[in-house]
Length: 101
Image (tube, rainbow, N blue to C red; front, side):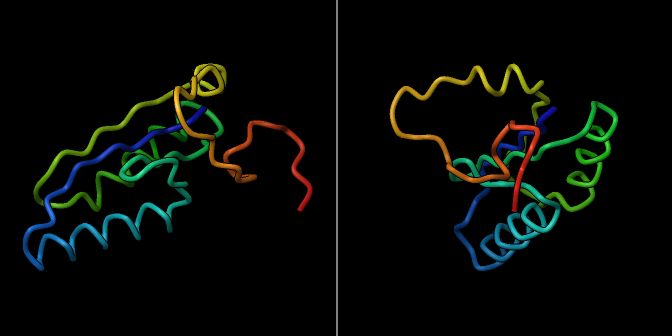
């Protein structure tokens, strides 16, 4: 299961830029991986843990802007088509069961 966070935050003032940086840093600290600018994804064990992660994100939302979440199964995530560009080649973005570090 994957939890995808998509956001569009204003960055016109220094306070808004600070909130943007803080939100992005919190996402990374929570284990989210950036797959595009303003699109982050996290691997979750099941729907319950995805709901929990979504609740954690809700605890540090910025005051302004747009933040959306989407829960996807591994099959739905792996069926994503790349119309242009290449996928992020990161082990954390892999759906393989065995990861050797």
